[in-house]
Image (cartoon, rainbow, N blue to C red; front, side):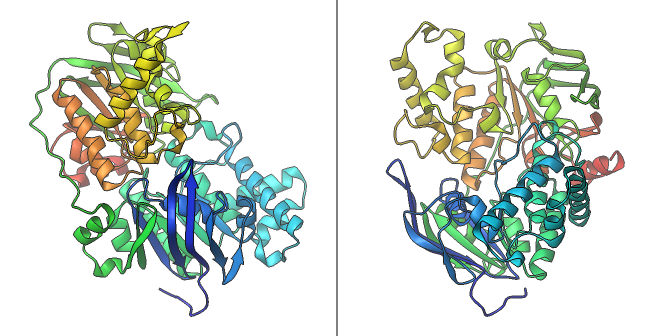
Length: 530
């Protein structure tokens, strides 16, 4: 670690922030120096993202101060923070889905340049020389230069990304890479990464974290917000732990055991995930020769076939961007396939059925992007919980809804699934932390015992306690006789939960294994067909 004795690159002290009267931050403090990777740990709802949102200019603190290179800053928005070369890669991405990768990056570069000019800051404070030069030429030349910068940074990061593709055609993992590239191309010196490895494979995560170390060695200050203790112990120089909006500890991750870190985070050891032996029955889901194409005509699923039986968890493993997202969207009715069948036992082919029709026959959906596909953040928790049952007529007709019953059942679901941070059932769902938002989705989807569960990265970005709880719910569904299709880039999760594992590469199922299976065999199947 190369750390100077000068003032920290970024320091937050005595920061408090309230939402709807609830204290999200209570006198929290944190600092990161040039040349180090500093990890920030804590449960979902502990205040980690809120504290970093203050640093990145998204939130104005009620109390406390932010210092950059020892100078007090009071950011009125994220562009002012970006002009001080603070870049944050959020867990839920800030991308324009209709634009291409290059256009998103150029838009960010132009915004930072404009903010710099408006604030009359010196040129060496904003962006790289190359990105500034790109902004002063014609649109075509600027876009070409931005594409070259993307390719350069992507090569150094080991990312595979097509800068011409529209963001809405990218997987969640690919969108994360775009956010990282966007921060780097716009010249971030203080880089905040919120759950950066949550949707990456082991190899991708290791490569990314090694790149973060390289950036720190070159003088960057890197903040790693994560729940992966292994990432912290292997790659962080310091670790700060938050709980209930407060900073509770700062320690050396290499001198602190995993058990000690876990206890600092949750106050107790994480519950173990256990289960009975599988007792699979009939094929509840049969996918036959499923083919899907992107809007540009590229074939993302090619004659894919697999079966998921009742009473089992079938795990789909693979590097992000190999058709997993398109498979889930086809199964949930978000994007229809070009050809092929999705057979539900006792129902028939539902390949062209609407999402509502699938829900009505007992298909539960847990998508990777919970805020885009599973929740309406501005609507109350009660409405988000009851929306599918309103559609089915469980609360009366659409012209007369029994809101009293819906609120009562939503409150019961929140209690049963331990959704934290709910002060009143009428509060917007968007105020929930990521893990608690995921619990709300699962509470709704499991309110009526589902026949088939389609779960895409269900533990993405969750702390150890919330992760164990979500995994327990999937196992409970499997033991109750449901068929569970688990699609996850987290190989540990697949190995822990799946009874059978299929490996996807380039839109095809290239290998299948019965559990237990050695992770090297799965990794080899990914590499052999990449």
